[in-house]
Image (cartoon, rainbow, N blue to C red; front, side, top):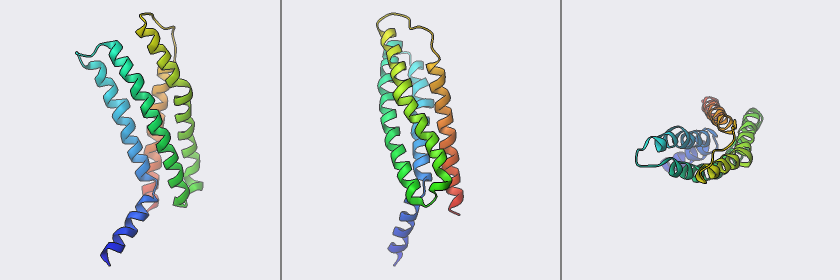
Length: 152
């Protein structure tokens, strides 16, 4: 009898978008706010190596975020709260697509120029990417918090 209650609670929790939001938020904070700055502070890593590793890491992060986005959209749909959460989920979709289709390729091209020994032309791509990262984290925090508040 007790295991049925546990299984019901697990099913109910898996239908709440909060777990996707907070997992995604943790992944983004870990890469963007912790690992990336630390890579440039390590004395044994040269700037070209740090840039090259960053290019690979952020391409992988974007793929993981696309997967998280699809999972979030599915969970929002089955949660029964699509109407309430769909607009914010769409904002996340726009951010992830903008980063993956425009900013990551542009920043990777700038890395190639630096690795070739030249100086890239001025660009706002890095500042835009960072701003979108902060916006994404804020939306994930809001969506996760709202999803938890709705399940009381």
